Length: 115
Image (cartoon, rainbow, N blue to C red; front, side):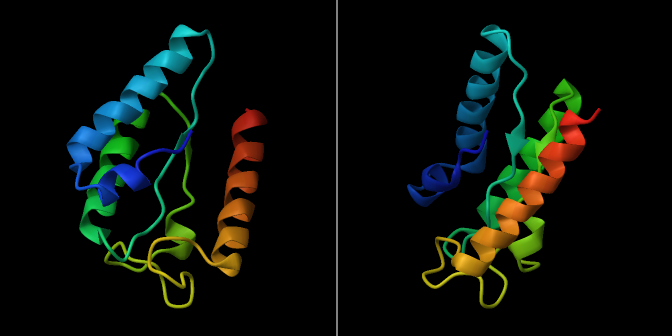
């Protein structure tokens, strides 16, 4: 499940946003299912917060043995913003970035479900 982008844009800290994400994971687990975490995509508006939130997600998912979909790296610049040409508004993926993220997610879901 992916959540967090809009929370960061409303000035919630990565830690506050992460608390909401882990609550979602807990709810999925309580319902008898296993969550799949997704890293949040880049942001030209809050790049350092995206990096921090994604690191929190990675660490906790590893601790909980929750698989991760990394749709961030294929479209991110090193500073947490969108790589050149991947967003027209700095907030949302453009068509190419959306296709890249979808292909990455599909490839990773197939790996997760084949285990």
